[in-house]
Length: 173
Image (cartoon, rainbow, N blue to C red; front, side):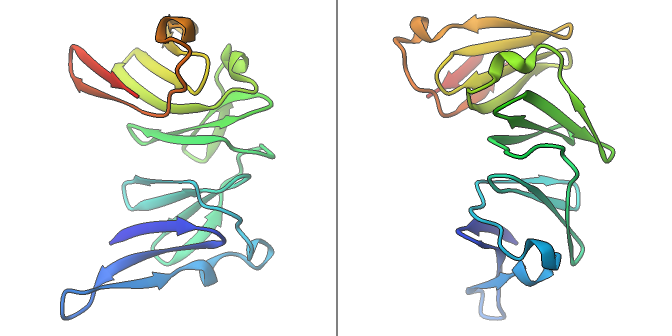
């Protein structure tokens, strides 16, 4: 399956008996109170569960059921999966993690208020990079956020992605 989302739509493509991709909407699986989901911005897969992020909600699709995660946020500006733990951003508060059906705030992440995080990259089990849109890159280590690369070091570039190429090389763009 290839999961996709768009404007007020979410679903997946699957190959039919001819091998042609066919679209299957799952929007009808949403609870009635959430029949309009706005735009789907990100999709993450965690085991057998597929997570969809809209502007203000995170939806979980497991089996044939969609539920809304209790994230305690009115707005969500990013979502990322690291080792089965979902991290998401609230532009008014900072970064949260969702693990085992519980939400917790990452202390110190209020520095990201009003700034969008585009990518989170695990360097080691104890070091995580947070790539922001306009404020550079931050290292999270020992429960502290520290500047790793500031935006002026990047010629005030607007960042939108990043990936670890190997143990010693980080590519950002």
